[in-house]
Image (cartoon, rainbow over all chains, first blue to last red; front, side, top):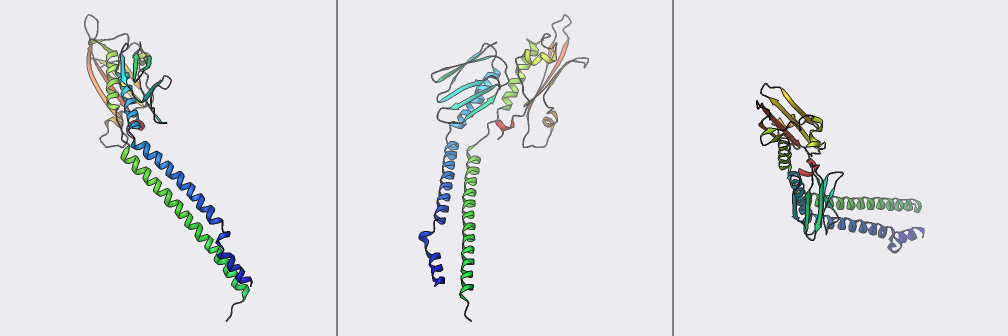
Length: 126
Length: 172
């Protein structure tokens, strides 16, 4: 009798919540991995990231090559350009992205940055 | 021979434990598989869609030009700039960090150093090496002559060596 009951208990899957719990855990983990992969692939495939890299380096080279008194106008549609005076970095952030790209310049001239609509005016001061 | 009911019960209990163990192994395998797949996708995408944009050559050229313009004004030696090597970079509006190596020497025709400036970790051996390194600094060496403003117009040889590391932002 006891043997029969024990066998029934093993076969009784309705009461087995352990498998379901593990399945849910796995499912949640798989979804998290899928979300991460989706964002990573999306971020890599879009050209915004590459464009911000190019733009930052381009601006840095312009700043380094420019002589005091120079005014440079750069078309920065879709990007926000800023300068960190402390670290001497040009920071470019695509408006549609969370991430940003920065590149260091070596010029110690004072720099003024003015954003006008889709253009960024960089003034190299004395 | 008939097995005792107590022994049979024990065997069934052991089977249940074995089943549980096998299930755990299966779940671990599933997680590992998922992690391997995601790492694989990440690596492939990174390799295919990220490219390095090396601008160090232009940067070195810009730095070299800035120093040259600082030392020479219309072909004449700018005596004011080379008075104190420690103030040279500041006077030239150049702010370097540890990613740069700079070696500027000005010698007269008697081979005597009239000005010498070294900045940063010495990268000259890496610039001269013939072996291909994964992370090699970009080097640029330039030499030119200048004359002094004095009546006898002394001639000087200016040698500028610029080396830039910046591996993270240019090679990766």
